[in-house]
Amino acid sequence: MAKILSGKELSEKLLIKQAEEVAQLKQKGIVPGLVVILVGEDPASQIYVRNKMRACEKVGIYSETIRLEENTSEEKLIEIIDKLNSDEKINGILVQLPLPRHIDEQNVLMRISPNKDVDGFHIANAGKLFTGQKSMLPCTPKGIMYMLDDAKIVFEGKNAVVIGRSNIVGKPIAMLLLNRNCTVTICHSRTQNLSEFTKHADILVAAVGKAKFVTADMVKKGAVVVDVGINRVDGKVVGDVDFEPVSEVAGYITPVPGGVGKMTISMLIQNTIEAAKA
Image (cartoon, rainbow, N blue to C red; front, top):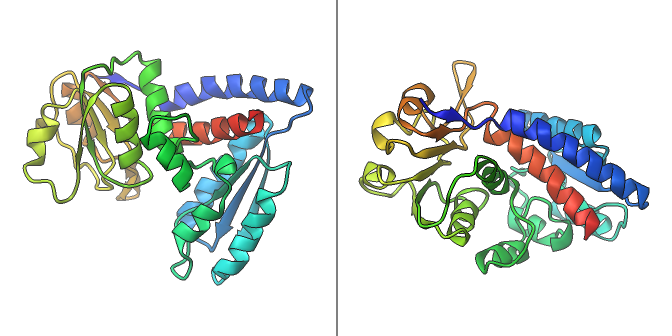
């Protein structure tokens, strides 16, 4: 039976550390500040933003949410970002995705100063990650690596398979694993004979957005299985991994909920603290 890698427990421990760090910064007259910009009324985004604000409150970070109408123009949004870029009391700027269709996401994300890009999506930060330099990392991949390090997972020479090639999770987690000397394969919707790849994975990351997509027969005995998926099925939240059967085969597994999602918010806080220190 697999050992459960609990993001809930780990994030609670980390919260205590982060609160201490923020208190020390405040003694030096530095108050980390985060602004989240929310455009429109997307229900899932509303929940994410609320959770982010709660976490900021717990550790003592100054935070505010700027809520904009669905029909806000791209120009108006960029104008707000420019103001925040030059506001010294704000260390982190996060634009909650997805944005309404009439707004070009890339234009908006590129406008955030790379030093305040706590989501790690700016091309400058992505380029630094790609070339192995220190950078602001995207929160979900950073959270995954933190969990695996905490569990003392060995990376060197291991086969890692990532299912999914998004700029937010798939590509950056592949680079982080590569930078830790894993042999990395990225699989996606066009991959043929997917299970031929997954069955050889010592570390398997599922970020595909399909409920219970990874089944027990696709997993190597004793593998580390990281489930990034958040899917709603019959009113319940489930991951991309068929949890019960896979946990009989895997050595380690992250649950959904209570796994990677919790770490994502912890890493947003961590990035904001690091930006304040810098």
